[in-house]
Image (tube, rainbow, N blue to C red; front, side):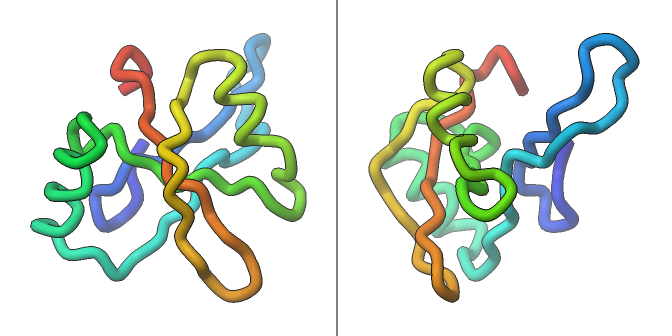
Length: 96
């Protein structure tokens, strides 16, 4: 799944009926295509693998859950937006 700016989105669905249960990512704008590509190269992944994880509000604990299941790897980079810090992660390529 992708956002309107072609950034990767992570949507979790119910294993039984496929209904959406949560959106694990958040779309942070403000990076140009070239900046996004450079950031991906720095992180050792493709631009499609970079995702910002929503780990606040109703999604508190999402980052730990995704990391523990091997779905994403935390880069340690945080984007400050409003009153929260949003973690930048690398999505395992098997989930693309």
